[in-house]
Length: 111
Length: 113
Figure 1 (cartoon, rainbow over the protein chains, first blue to last red):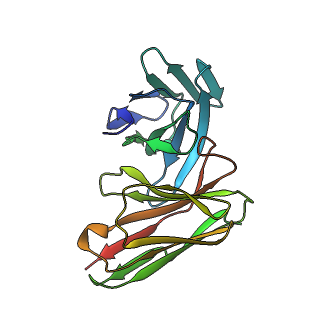
Figure 2 (cartoon, one colour):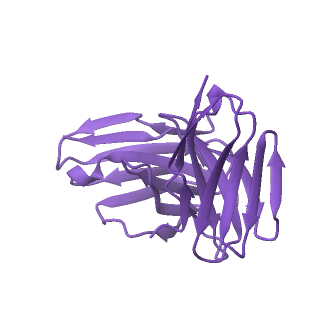
């Protein structure tokens, strides 16, 4: 089974609203990363949060990590139509040799 | 300039054929990866190379053979293509180990007829 699983699988909101996506994982991690994938394109790294961090910000993005619950959330504030994409979480293991990706959340932001 | 470039972008071919996908990165990274993304968008790692040496070889049929002529290139050769090989294949690179942020190419969409 997947290490990271996103919830919801799909999310549709209006421009200006906030979007929250969640990621749960099963084993101990070194870090957790969020990526964005626009249609027909490769994944783009958004933010990395280490296992000893609880919250991180980057522009309109806010990521939280709760290692006791093995979960993370990505909040996009004041969403724009250009934020329409799939968002993936990926966990890095303590072995440090690979990332394991979840199945993604498809976000649609309507203008 | 494109950081991670893959060619071709689209590949349509018959079952049983052999094909190659090329990947080059100009970021100076020492680790490169191949991923397979299926129709449900699930992304699974196939191979990882660090400084031209194979680090990860997940459960992938031996019809798939990666080759890294130098640390800026990681090519993927596929023999005897099967219908189930239809997917989007992504190349990626990172500096250091697999915990670092990865830079992805735009993918190669492989369709088997």
